[in-house]
Image 1 (cartoon, helix red, strand yellow):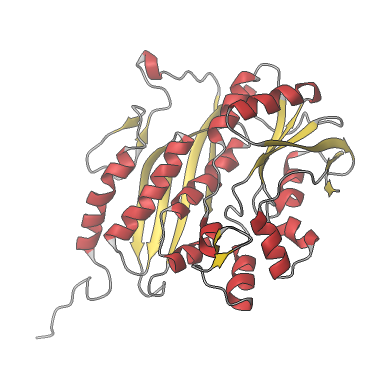
Image 2 (cartoon, rainbow, N blue to C red):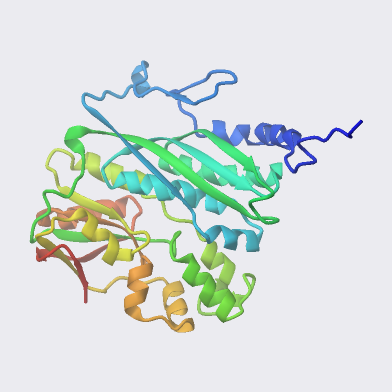
Length: 353
């Protein structure tokens, strides 16, 4: 009689999955509000758009659901090299919730997908801790997720992350960019560094070309290379939603852009009319990581602005007479706003001077 084989012998450990579920429960529950409905052993997450108790009640007359999905890209390779996998969970949430925020949407819930070579419950718990951290920052619920153990697809210690977020906005409060016109002001919010874009170029420069190590201290940066590269993406949900609430009646905020791959040059044109250009003056504090990479490459400045956020993670286009009050309000919300420039007549492009 042939010897019977098990799923574990084929590379998948069901017991480890059960252990992981027990470990992550506390982190997941820390993101839940009374709008999350509990159903034992459910195959899907349940979320109420409105909640009956007065304290939590939200009334939507004409709600529009907004959905986003994204990953962290090859930043996960840096996380593997560092042996630190929690902060990329924050990145994962940030990439989706910052995108939906562009339309003025309030994030409601988030779901994750984690694929690994080998399921290690404590490692997955670290990832979920980071994702939960991001969800708390965005005030959304981690409603569910999936973990896949695929030893034939991923090499030893390799993993990948993907996420999906759903939000809501009143139709009349959608931010679409249609009202943008010449004379409007452009305000930028500071990034924390690289965020989650351009890591193929970053890794090529630092590891393949320069032969650096993640634990190598870089005097110009004042920290190790790994610390600089792994710093998580900023989540702009709380300050921007607070700003939109303050100015919601007057349509003061006309357009917004999350500055991801493509930088200022590639992302701002997505939210302005074809008849307009945005002229930006380089007068903000660019984090040292960008200058370091540009010189180490070396990389042309034009290429830097095409690939990276260059210190500006989020952009708002606003009515000019509210520029100062908006920037003051953002400072009170602990943001670092910069006046970047103006909207002018043009053909839908960004000019950086």
